[in-house]
Image 1 (cartoon, rainbow, N blue to C red):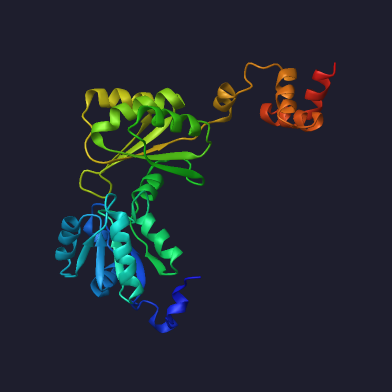
Image 2 (cartoon, helix red, strand yellow):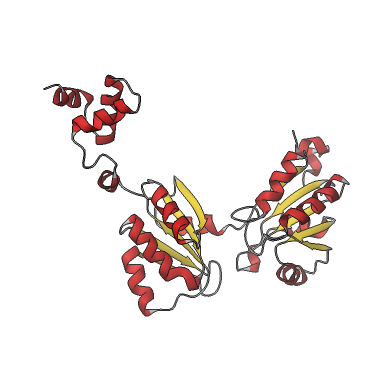
Length: 294
């Protein structure tokens, strides 16, 4: 089991940079003032930095007067570079992993590097900071206690609709990323699958042109029919309510008898099938029992 404690970090020196450790360093998503003191210390003291785009990270480092060796690590070279980074870590070097903006390994190829390190007993620790998902959720004015993050939807039409249909009945607040040139089509597809719901569209978070639009899916489509989408978006959409779930339920056109029979055919005993039917419909099980035995 990998552990920071296994690296003999004393309580007094818990912020020391240790060889053989991968540091996941969150970087600003727009406002450079959001970088943490700890993040700057790690970036300044690790042996090397693995970056999604070394040019973007180079600008960030230059702004803060940091100069470090960098290796590119992104979606199309992650397998090869992951092995190289792992070997360096095994040889006792320390590495900071950064993405272009926000927290690495969240909807990001960094998750593969974390997995690789875990499989090889290499210690990984996280330097927390900016995360567009959490920032947008907090600003959305939608329920935040339970949520799911879906990242970017597939550009493949069949995969996209399959995924939307899988999650359309989820009661949790749902969050997507989207690029401006795909926004209109994505809003239309989500409306088609989910029906009209509340949505908060968060763009250019922490930047000068930050904007939070709280409306409905149909309202967002109408707005962006007349206005061009600009900047990267985080879409925060309210979860499905009980009424909508029932409208979309597999049993909506079944009689009580057919509903119970469905579960019996699936292997449940009669009383268990009655309980499952009652739960689906929000009815007392005694009422279902009386109805099918009358």
